[in-house]
Image 1 (cartoon, rainbow, N blue to C red):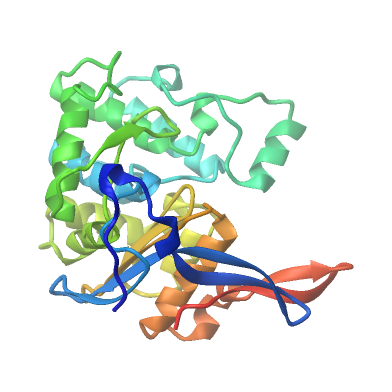
Image 2 (tube, rainbow, N blue to C red):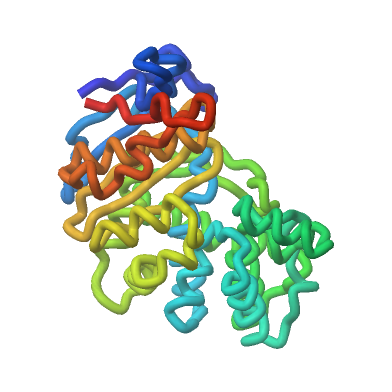
Length: 328
């Protein structure tokens, strides 16, 4: 096992990063994606790590697992496909937008209440279609609008104010932070503001792996399992028709997975084996390849994740290389 200590203040020790994936062209390694990764056993012990397991970083949307759980615990009770959307970074497909409206309608709200930034859909195909229709950026298209709709619904259910639902001192956000610490088994080192405007809290990689593990291994009918089971039953609501996180969960029975912006992933098998990674440079292609590598390391056949373990590199319109994992 490889591990190093992080300096104070949460500043990442760049020299501790390890190669997680590579970009090759015609047999030549053109680039390397450096980062950190960890695999833990069902009992929470570390099986293997690459890079640092002590430095804290922002898991970004990988934290949505615990945010969804916190809302379920606070009384948010939705059909399973909508429950999955509460923890989603959705692609902006029509069924996602319909789901956001449906969540809001349960408490007599409309998309006008959303405080997500105006954005185009996350998925390039949906973005181009949106532009072709002459539509502008809007809060509902933003990939976190499912979570925000759920936050608003949770506030209404509990009689909390909705105007300031993103404030770190709002009862909703206080409860979400407490649930994240509970499920990860780690005190929050520092916090900031995520891309969607909600608070984001820093964790170490083992803590992030424990977060996914805690949701999967919880007892039936608990808030943790309600969210984990919904995400696994409706992975297309967690990501989208052309998304890596949806592909991984659809292809691997029992897997709970959640991607995060700027190079983050976490996941857990049904038996409690779990993983987490952070690509230093934030590359989505490097992140996807590294996640495929972790899954292969844990016994998933390479053919199952080939879409992301051998992402094509083109030259003159032909495949001349690949983006692939380098974890061993």
